[in-house]
Structures are given as C-alpha cells and as structure tokens.
Length: 171
Image: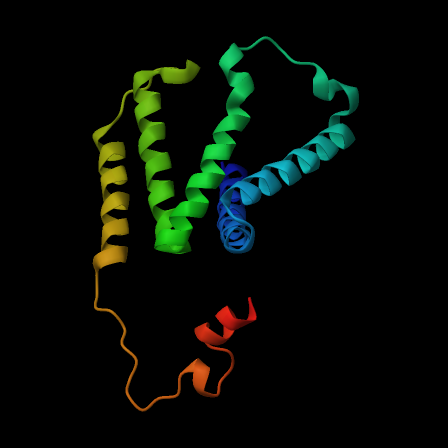
C-alpha cells in the first residue's frame, strides 16, 4: 500500500508540473499546438519506454471492449480543459477543482459499476470525504482577504526586475 501511495504522490507532482508547463506553452503557441505537442511527446516517450521494457510484447493486445482503444482521445480533452482552466483560474485553483472532480466522478463510476468496474457501495465516509475536499477548494478560493500592496513600496516594474508590462513588450 505504501508503494502505491508513493506512486500516486509522484503522479500528483508530475501532473502539477506538467500543467504549469502546458499553460506556459499555451501562452506562446495556443491550445491546439500545446495539446498536439504534449500528446505527441507523450506518445513518443511511452512508445520508446514500452519498446525498451517489453520489446515485441508491447503489441500483444488482449481482448478488451472496443471503446477502450480510444482512451487517448480523452487525453486531448484533459490537456485542453486543464490548459484553459489554468489560463482562467491559475494553476492551483484549476488543479484543485480537477482533482476534486476526478475523485467525485471516480466514486460515482465505482458506485454505478460503469465502464467495466465492479459495482462498489459508496459509504457515508467516502461521500463526506468528497464533500470535505470540495469545501476545502471553496475555502481555498474564497476564504481570507485579498493581499493588497502597501503604498510607498517598490513594485517589480520600478527597479527590482521586469514587471508585467516589461514582459509584454518583450514578447
């Protein structure tokens, strides 16, 4: 179980970093180019790693439902939606909403036995857990007061490095 938790933590760190990289690429190249680049590089990397680790067995497909072959198309939606969410909300808030939605929908699919999953009962504890996480996202977004700059302090555009307007002029 600990190993699984470590893999999941690593996945979370990688997804977080990837989302930030994707949003930066999207600022300069656009959403469609970002999605193509991300998924194209992902395909090349996974094909290379698969060939190195499994050799010819990589292409020994077992029988499965036909719609599972198209799961990569969902990746297009994932990358596109997260890039747009990060652009509009910022990385932390967009990822928090995305992770909460993942958990809620996973719980729903487990409970309904959809997509070939074994039907599992949703416990009150699990439902409360999802609601607590959703409430945490709302507290994160709307809790506290906004930070205001003090008057008389130096802003980055006045001497401490490039400000936002300076960066826009460079583009």
